[in-house]
Length: 180
Length: 107
Image 1 (cartoon, chains in turn orange, purple):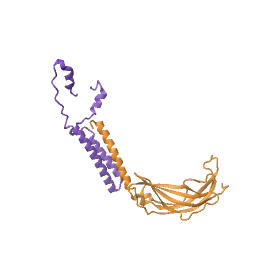
Image 2 (cartoon, one colour):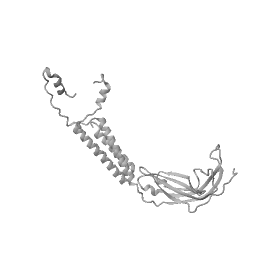
Image 3 (cartoon, chains in turn orange, purple):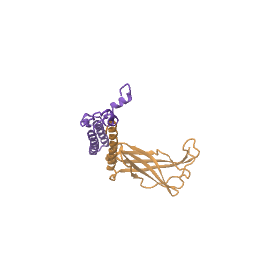
Image 4 (cartoon, helix red, strand yellow):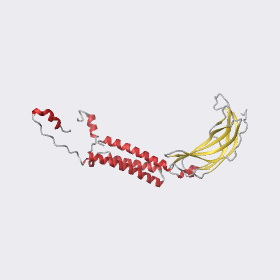
């Protein structure tokens, strides 16, 4: 502390350490969040399995599922906590292929403000492709769509949950070949 | 040194900002007090208002205040200068080598 530079060094180190403790305190306040009561509904409107290519010059042709669905959710209660920066909503399709479970994200949205927390889409198409790969969807059964959320805090751990699921599993129709 | 003979040392000397030992202790205690108080107040105000940006803003403000209070060499930190012992009288010519070491003053 004998000269200006020494005091500047000491102050910056102490302020940084105190800031770390402050951030830990903020993270601690939302470590345990009360289980939120969220309204939500997910419906599958239609599934279509066709042959396609990932890109115009891709070497292989594989099965693609095109889905249409309704999503109706209200995630505004998640913003009641002060330590919520944004909420990531994702619609995931769970399917059993050859006895093994497989998950794909079909659609997602980032909710940045409480006012945008009411999500309502009808007859939406999947944002991301759902591909069959080598094995395809021949033995695929029990398609369930679930709307999950991830709460991204300002400081702290990511916490996840599920808003709604489709009530009954559906099956994929057989693949259509020779579609123009 | 002077501006012409050693300009870098001259300039860095202007920014040295020395303070006496009592001043140093005061500066260190003040530094701890201001920063910890800022953190506590920032957290409480932000928590009551339920806004994280208030916590960060108040902490930044408090840090700037701490910077202004602790870092510059304020005259209040130099109110207890070191008391040096009086210098010994110069010795007769024969013992000049040993006495010279004891009577050296700091510049």
